[in-house]
Length: 414
Image (cartoon, rainbow, N blue to C red; front, side, top):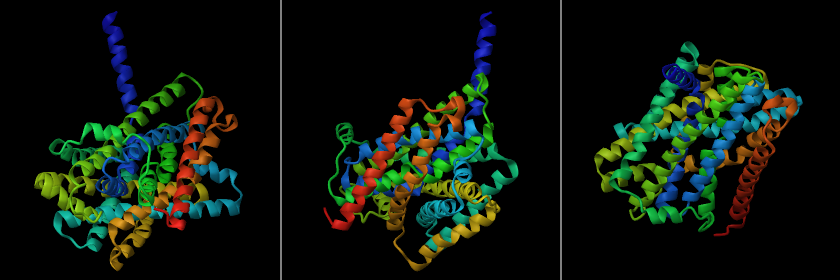
């Protein structure tokens, strides 16, 4: 009897593990080069001051990603599809324009990150590195197109492991101050630039394209979930999927900031990723610098493929049109290559792209909160009132931060 019970438990655990995966693909959006740029800049410039932003942003992201996945499971449709079915044509087109601008900002950050990493590793010109990053992302998308979602999930999860190693390694050489790290949990700002960085960190963590994408990933993996034991089990497992993925992504983000705060704060850097890499090498040694660059490279390769996938989901849902993923990859690669070709500072462009993402969050988050609170949309999977209240507070906090950022920037306050 005991053996039968144990076998049953093992079987249920294996069945649950099979359901994991979509959240780890979406989690790549939370450890992309934009995160590296904003977190490293925040740690190098302000030390442990903005630790609270990383923690709060990842807690917010966990709730948001679960709601997105649940919407896809309950309705069998992605968030852009649900919105596309409900918006009139003009509103749908306008909504798509802002979503596409956000997707372009996402792609810009990811290609720039890959180009910088290739420059650090092989001294390649940034433009050449951008082209190589685009080619690699095409290869990753080909895996999804030809072999399906699960092989794609495995490859992306493997790259996530490389990212984790790359940014955690330095902490073993230069451990952060526990007391200062805990002190950084107190919410506060120092000046206008710290607010700008906080908005960028938020935009790099609670990412609009990940909100749109996760609903499609969950739907494509599991399909429409009926209101029965199986449906509840899938949604319950999705909660663990999201929790594990966001815990890992949050830990990597925190490691980036803590590494910069502990090893780079007293060094002469200009806030660029190149200077951060040089400072890591000078302070922590060439091996840690190599792992840092490899983590950045894996981040650029994986996130640009996932970002392009998200853009296709957005276009299909809002415009009711589909173009091949590989063709979209080629088209969306052009703006990033233009930025590299004209010589714009890539790290500054990375940070500003994350601010653009921050402004796009309400357009994805507010409809998600509203739709998941409606029984006519979600059926018996409708969000509990307490969940909706917390999600509404998250949306309000994000919008408020953006408004403060605009006011401070326009007034020139410091």
